[in-house]
Length: 68
Image (cartoon, rainbow, N blue to C red; front, side):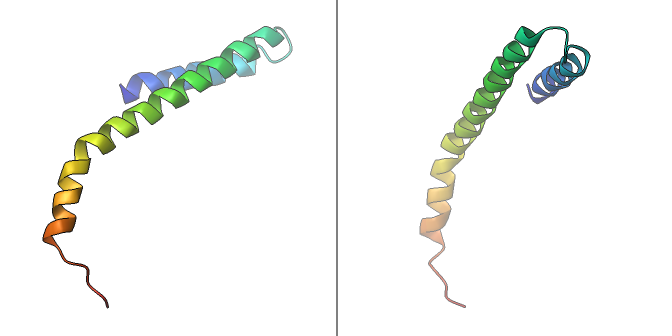
Protein backbone atom coordinates (compact mmCIF):
# COMPACT_ATOMS: atom_id res chain seq x y z
CA UNK A 1 0.00 0.00 0.00
CA UNK A 2 2.90 2.33 0.71
CA UNK A 3 4.18 1.80 -2.83
CA UNK A 4 0.81 2.91 -4.21
CA UNK A 5 0.90 6.07 -2.09
CA UNK A 6 4.43 6.83 -3.29
CA UNK A 7 3.36 6.37 -6.91
CA UNK A 8 0.44 8.76 -6.39
CA UNK A 9 2.79 11.33 -4.88
CA UNK A 10 5.21 11.08 -7.80
CA UNK A 11 2.32 11.34 -10.26
CA UNK A 12 0.96 14.42 -8.49
CA UNK A 13 4.41 16.05 -8.41
CA UNK A 14 4.90 15.46 -12.14
CA UNK A 15 1.46 16.88 -12.94
CA UNK A 16 2.22 19.97 -10.90
CA UNK A 17 5.40 20.58 -12.91
CA UNK A 18 3.71 20.11 -16.28
CA UNK A 19 0.46 21.95 -15.61
CA UNK A 20 1.72 24.92 -13.61
CA UNK A 21 0.31 27.63 -15.87
CA UNK A 22 -1.94 25.58 -18.15
CA UNK A 23 -4.69 24.54 -15.77
CA UNK A 24 -5.17 26.09 -12.31
CA UNK A 25 -7.99 23.63 -11.62
CA UNK A 26 -5.44 20.82 -11.86
CA UNK A 27 -3.66 22.31 -8.85
CA UNK A 28 -6.89 22.21 -6.87
CA UNK A 29 -7.41 18.57 -7.83
CA UNK A 30 -3.85 17.74 -6.83
CA UNK A 31 -4.33 19.49 -3.49
CA UNK A 32 -7.37 17.29 -2.90
CA UNK A 33 -5.28 14.24 -3.87
CA UNK A 34 -2.59 15.30 -1.38
CA UNK A 35 -5.25 15.58 1.34
CA UNK A 36 -6.57 12.11 0.53
CA UNK A 37 -3.06 10.64 0.68
CA UNK A 38 -2.36 12.39 3.99
CA UNK A 39 -5.63 11.14 5.49
CA UNK A 40 -4.88 7.61 4.30
CA UNK A 41 -1.42 7.70 5.89
CA UNK A 42 -2.85 8.93 9.21
CA UNK A 43 -5.46 6.16 9.17
CA UNK A 44 -2.74 3.58 8.51
CA UNK A 45 -0.67 4.92 11.43
CA UNK A 46 -3.70 4.85 13.72
CA UNK A 47 -4.44 1.25 12.75
CA UNK A 48 -0.87 0.23 13.55
CA UNK A 49 -1.00 2.06 16.88
CA UNK A 50 -4.30 0.45 17.83
CA UNK A 51 -3.00 -2.97 16.87
CA UNK A 52 0.22 -2.52 18.87
CA UNK A 53 -1.37 -0.73 21.82
CA UNK A 54 -2.20 -3.84 23.93
CA UNK A 55 1.39 -5.08 23.57
CA UNK A 56 2.81 -1.71 24.55
CA UNK A 57 0.58 -1.53 27.61
CA UNK A 58 1.56 -5.08 28.62
CA UNK A 59 5.26 -4.23 28.29
CA UNK A 60 4.80 -1.10 30.39
CA UNK A 61 3.15 -3.10 33.16
CA UNK A 62 5.89 -5.74 33.11
CA UNK A 63 8.74 -3.25 33.26
CA UNK A 64 8.57 -0.96 36.30
CA UNK A 65 9.50 2.68 36.00
CA UNK A 66 13.21 3.17 36.47
CA UNK A 67 15.03 6.31 37.49
CA UNK A 68 18.53 6.83 36.29
